[in-house]
Length: 262
Image (tube, rainbow, N blue to C red; front, side, top):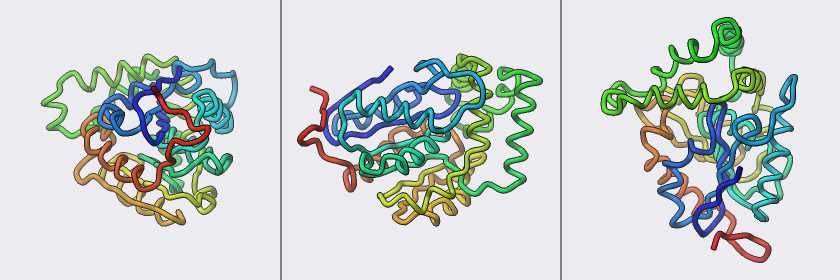
């Protein structure tokens, strides 16, 4: 499904693995008074059925192009989180004429062999022990202790979102996340690109974000000090503020052939 909210320069939001368009609700709530915000569900995550076998990144790029065409946007700012950042970056390479600006949240590039091996080990554990048991041990590391204490249901809500995705789909899309490498694409992305993460995010730390930004021709870097992976849940207002400032500088403006929500 596609959800279009608000009016103004368009921003398309691409969620990550084990999520749905609802991941962006907190952020969009702070943006829809100034921007046309488009969110949608990835194939297998509430969107189209995911085909059997290995999942190519191109399938998600084609689906994103379908969303853009269906909504009627000529150009937009595309913001992706985690696997969604890989999809948005691949889309920017495949359809540069459609992208006015790009946002990559929690998106590692040039992962070390040790990091890749850790990903492969996690996939093996997911297959042997199941998603609920494996991810139940990990989600606690995504948020600050103070946030968890103040929001005791947050971990259960996130785990319920993860386990709400078909287990086979979750594992196969996590395999896609593990084997996808953005580094070869980044030098080809000519538009302004926002790189954003939490300082201590697992797999997408401040150091990783700086390395990713260094590969881009026109990077803008935002690191939230003291935060981990849960920035969309813990500080959606601050995330929205950074996206708004970035989009105001670079987003496409509605015009001829550019849809805007009435």
